[in-house]
Structures are given as C-alpha cells and as structure tokens.
Length: 110
Length: 346
Image (cartoon, rainbow over all chains, first blue to last red; front, side, top):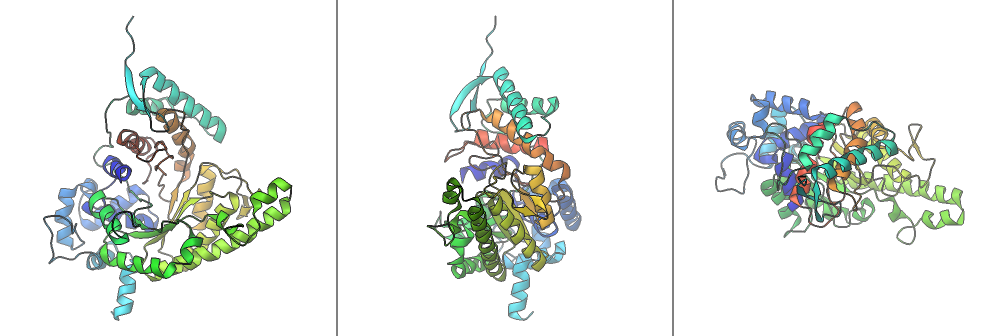
C-alpha cells in the first residue's frame, strides 16, 4: 500500500475525500479527459475546479448534495446518504447512468 | 576547485545511490536520446529536460504536483484478500488511501482463471457495490499464454516456433485468441450483471500481438453491448512483441507498435481509458528511466481523445522494480508525468 499512498498524496485527486470519484466516473462513462471532466463536475456541483481536490471544501459540498462522505472517520453521518444511496444522488447530479444503481432499481421494482 | 555536491537518488532496482547534478543531467539526456532513437519519435525539449532535472536533482524525501493539478488514480490491484477480506481491502483503498477508483481482482490475475470462479467473484462485486461509493471496476490480465499446453488446451507456440513450425504456431495463437475473447466476455457479463462500473484489461500484450488483438476485439464487443461501461486497456510494455507477426486489428499489423499506435487502435476499439507502459531498466538511474518513459509516451498525448492513465507501478513508468518502491522515487514519477505530459491519471 505504500506505493499507492505515495501516488495518492503526490498527484491523486483524493477519491471520496474530495471529488475524485466523481471525476473518475466522467472519465469512465463519457471518456472525458481530465480538464473537461473536472469542469463538468465543478459545473454540476456549482463550485470551482480547485475545490474538487480540496477535502475541506468537498466535505461541505458532499453533505449538501447528499453524495456521500467517508464512513470510517470520527465525523460520520449515519443520517445522510452513503454508499448505494449516495450513488443514486451522484447518478442524478452528474446525469450519468451508474450500473449498480440501475440494477438496484430493476431488482426492487423502482 | 569546488567539488560538485552529491545528491541521493535511486537506480531502477530501487537501491539508493549518490549522483551529482551533472550526472543526473547526463542520464536524462541519454535516456531521452535512446528512447527517441528506439521508438522513432522526438526527444524531449530542453525545457522539459530542465524541468525533469529540477525534479530529480533534489534531496527531498517527497515531492508533489501543485494544488489544483491533481489527476485520477485508477488503482489496479486494490481489492483482494491482502487485508482481511476483499471488501475490507477495497474499503481501505477508498477510505484510507484515497484512490479515485478501486478494482476488484482475484489473486490469479487472469480472465481464464477467473472464469472457473466467476460466481464467487461476481458476488463480491455485488457486495462491493453496496459497501463503496467509489467506482469499482473488475480487473484481470488477458494472459493469452494460459491457453497453451500444459496449462491450456492449445499446442504451445513457444515450443512450435523453435522447431520452425511457424504456420502451426500462428494457428495456435489464433485459436487461443478466440477462446480468450469468449472468456473475457463471459467474465465481463457476470461482473456487469453484479453492478461493475468498469472492466480493466491489465498487462495487455504480455503474450504478444495476439494477446493485444484479443483485448481489442473483446473491448469492441463490450462497447457495442454496454455503451456506458468503463473499459480500461493497460499495456504490458512499450512495444508489442510479434509472437505471431501477422495479427491485425482493423487492417493494422499489431507487431512492433509503440504507445501512440497502440492508443490509435485502443480508441478505435472503444475503450474509455488507455494505460501506456514503459518498463524499467534496473541498472540505470530513475532519472534515465523517467526520461526514456516520458519520451516514448509523449506522442500519445498529442493524439489522445480518451483519458491517458500511465502505468506507474513497480517496475514501470520510472518507479523502481522492488517490492517496496520508495516514496521519493514514486512521487517523482507522479509529478514528472503530470507536469511534463499533462496525463489524465495513472
């Protein structure tokens, strides 16, 4: 894990601590390059591009938008959307299909 | 006469050595010149070499990109039973390491091997989708060699070739490639049914041109069936080895392709992300290796229509070949690729 930790700190967006998961989804789903993907996500969140990799700014934004925060910290939010619940909101916010969300809807008859 | 101070740096095997700034500069120049000659591309510009020299001629224990320049960390190999369970492993990478997408994988990292255990693996994909918010992809190697005897049913082309049985060796690889395409689709269908966000073809081309060909064909078939699926094709090396020699995709011969030509075909096949790969020379410095890697991958960036996630794991992309890659070398590779090439991730 040391190597991954080094890469994460040296140049990674920060994943769920920031908006890294959201930008990654735009690369995977829409084949967007990094600049376009960051701008798209920032526009959808109503924030600046630099906020996307700032964990302090993104904690507030993620809670406001209901798109999930880290579950393994001392500041957990059990009353807010997390994991699959958060992914429902991410799918709506980014206007992209998320496979696990679509399967969930199909299987519970939503 | 003053003596030029020595700077601690690394060799490609990870060992710590001391070099002067002048020696590091020479290694950067030699690395790019050799890569340009070998891959028939342009060497790095003087300003790019100066930038690399600033990054590598430093005693700092760690380095990083500027705030705001961060890119996506699509980390292969983040979810197997290294720590507790598959689920715990994936959650640790999401919650503690902070990677941007995680990858469920099985320790025998091969689509052929996964096929026999696909229900178990797919069940973990379903569980992972309930446990994580991050995108979760499924990853394995195309690993064409697994289809040859004694591991598989096909006559072994590595044994046929030395006997001069060229036609038989080619026919064997073609037959194996057909089986591989079927197996990749089979595993992918199960993972997607379980909720996977993407499929990763890791270390593509490890068994040569038919290995790469099978990955491209499987990618195109998956794209036709799943328009929104994340598909990542990461390579095994900088150069596609011609084990077959005549294998083609869309009329293009695959043997001998360098990263830019590889990317052209990966884009045509419909992948979402391309991972170029340049292997490490363990006897040369990390400065020599990073200059070589960036020179070979730079032509990709000029034509990229999809995100480029450079391979920067143990033994590739300027990261030393050792079990515990040092943070000084790893972080320098990250910063170099982001700042010189403006990559989209790694």
